[in-house]
Length: 428
Figure 1 (tube, rainbow, N blue to C red):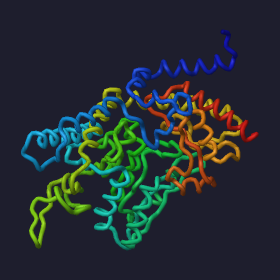
Figure 2 (cartoon, one colour):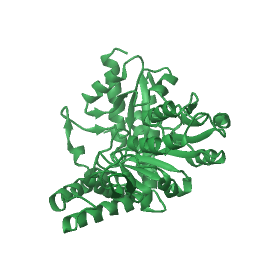
Figure 3 (cartoon, one colour):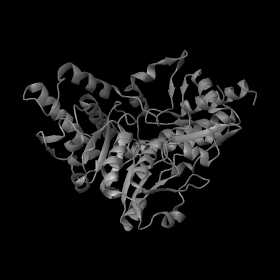
Figure 4 (tube, rainbow, N blue to C red):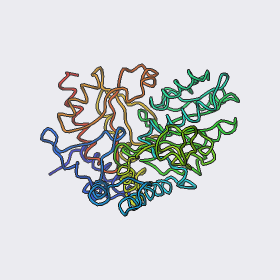
């Protein structure tokens, strides 16, 4: 079969992607049972990874084995099942600590997700340390989970919430940082990577800037920790929040990293069992960090499952994960820009992670997503929990394709071809 010039160009790009990534994508795809599912009679193309990733067999089997062989509560029993459950639960905490290079596993707190992790800091640290005259700095590109809690805390404490702007290209206005980050700033909370624009922010520089005025730095790592190497000691951040379900782990488990000296002096987020050392009718003595912040029966199976996910990603190498996604996003931006009417938000490929948010003429993103679903392609449409950022660009919604370790150039081709079909349906 003779290839057209266009096909030869596509294959050249695909070959370049394959040759520049160290990941064995076909072997990885074989680890994910859901990729064998047919959607509307077509092979699934899953491009909604910024919302939640799929799970490999290794994680699924680890969770199943826990329920089949160990199911028991942790920290409280003196029988084999409880002791072994506790050992694996805490081993998962240690795996996460190694994954982000925390100084100690005592700096890893289990939460339900990124949102709860940020709320923990907002309510425990924020309500204790903030007051009138103080300022909290966030950015215009924040996910609602790193905006709404600070709105609530600002209202309750009398602190002022400020927003570092984003420019037309999708970059933070670093030239304005000195104007927004002042001696009144007590906390700078920002995302490491935008879930809409894909922008990868200069985290270490932003942390250093916060510390230079005496402020703490909280990093929303929901879109960074699953996709690139993250070293909290090198970054110098005070807090880092991320979710298990976006990094091959189960839902219902997230992580708050906090510098131990900060966690030691913060009051508990919730009260109840397991977060206590002694309880009397008139007083209570708190447990040690991190258990002081983990009230009640925890998400045991989910934590153990996240431990398995961390080990899976560690074996792949996070540098390789990032390189694969950068190659995919570069190819996706080239292919989608060939579709007349597509407008892509955000910076150039080398400054972003594996996220491409776009519009297609005047077609509503919900209609785009519905028609792509008919082709077996899963994307996201809407505000992506970042309504203020969409308002900044004058958009009611966008369509978003987001990539991960199991995605391929061929799937991007299917996306581009399906968008051409969307144009036909709407006579664009």
